[in-house]
Image 1 (cartoon, one colour):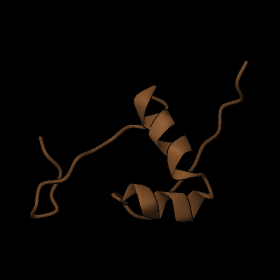
Image 2 (cartoon, one colour):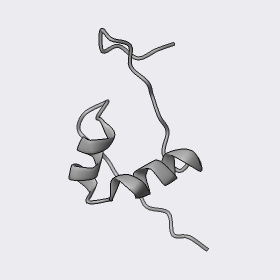
Image 3 (cartoon, helix red, strand yellow):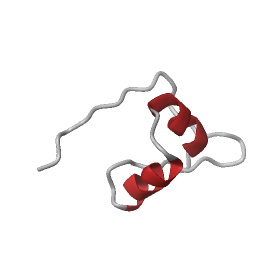
Image 4 (cartoon, helix red, strand yellow):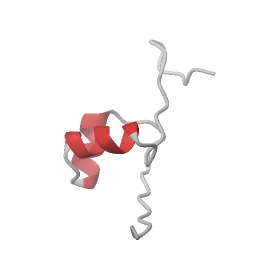
Length: 52
């Protein structure tokens, strides 16, 4: 059984690269977590607002 891990960031949106810097996780691990649903992805429009 996997332990539940909670990561809290002070910014609402960060790039995968910045998330990697903040958490210490590799980009490959983050991409795997996005692919299997352990992380939620919010894509941003060009004006930096979240898509609805």
